[in-house]
Length: 276
Length: 317
Image (cartoon, rainbow over all chains, first blue to last red; front, side):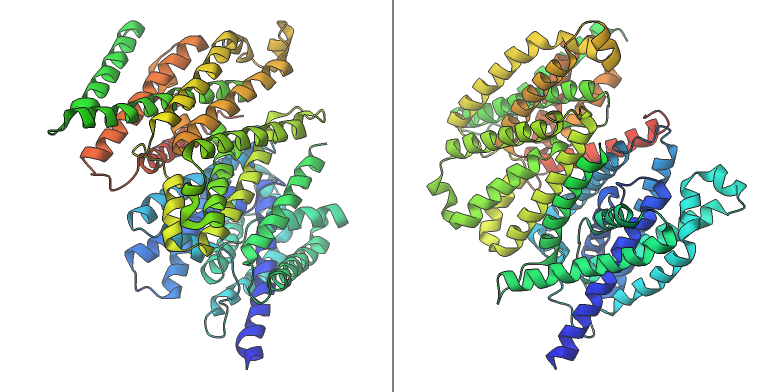
């Protein structure tokens, strides 16, 4: 029984979220043509948190799907704003863009804090939003399946995302409908981020480091890189989950924390390497 | 309006704000009220000046108007430290460690952190200041995750102690701490004022500055140390106010056409004191303490920041 109710859903959720988040990082990096952009460094996670918070305050009785919808709307608009901002910036300083993204995230967070403080739920918000798979049970995690079609779409559109990243006139010149592609990309990213934040909470850095590691390993051939990206994302989450469960057995460390530490340190090394 | 008039009006507003803050609705126990408000006022002035100085210097050396030094992870390390104390000692935390010790260790930790980051970036010939910022922000995210985890684990009563540190409150000040803080601020200011004239040259850009004979890297190192000192003092004193820096510097640049940094820093200090005092006044008398000044300032500052990005989005490099 434990196997069917908890273990299988948990493993599936881990694989899907891992693959989905790393692919969404990949899409954002292609669209912005910047290695350091991802849902973590563009305010995506904060926007999803904000969406859930507002759903929680405005409709306390709301079901999971309403919260998910609200998170989706917020994340999508935030991603849209960010990508168009990146486009406007003429000098594409690799470091400057994620810096603005992180700032953008902390602004969204401060707006959320304003409201959660008012409703006296600061500690609760921290709780639902720290990535944690222990509450994934049969019947409560199915929203996560939304990630599956996104994976397929990203595989079909992979090259088009890269072309769109080269700029509007370039894409149009090659006969692509630029805006459609950007919207599809951002919608996919927002779907993944909001589905995963609603069901398991925020997991930082996955979308940031996995595509970078993959590109260091096998280069930038998209058709080859994409499956490996998804695979590595899933493996990272599985490993972190097992670690989190074994280290303090019989308790467990939330995965947001293990990934946060591993991812943070990896990103640190990446920046130092890439800056050479 | 002429520059002189604007400056005089700003000063008058500052004086009015101070008088209003000190004397509005005093009640019967005038001595008590005055002394309590005096402490709060002094704290706000210290915080206002250190935020203004650190932000102006930081924005000039990064050549960017939408950054503030507190994004570099100082605040997250402060919160992490406070959370850790509460996590280890529980609600007895501040019987074990006095407020002065806490302040001292927090400042020390933040300074140590900034020197460490600094060595990491500048020790290896990578002299791009943006790498420093990005590293700082990533470390900040990392520390946030750690404290978030502890926030979830500790019980709600203990969390309320941590929450006190997460949101600036000028109500909890004590005199001894104020003494130490103003001493540190004074030292930092004396050093800062000696070197502030070089900022006018640095504002021209790195190449020009070196060409004009400045020891650019040495000066940047010095400024970063001053900034670290100022930010740690204000953060350890009242807690994080991330967006105050952006708000006040941009207001100052918008209101005054001053070019010399020595004028800008003082004008900015006045503006930031006004913001804090007026904000605190509203929170005490209009909102009757239902929220804290940092949350309001972060909210307003955050919205203003979005507006700045929107307006200047074509100009930023």
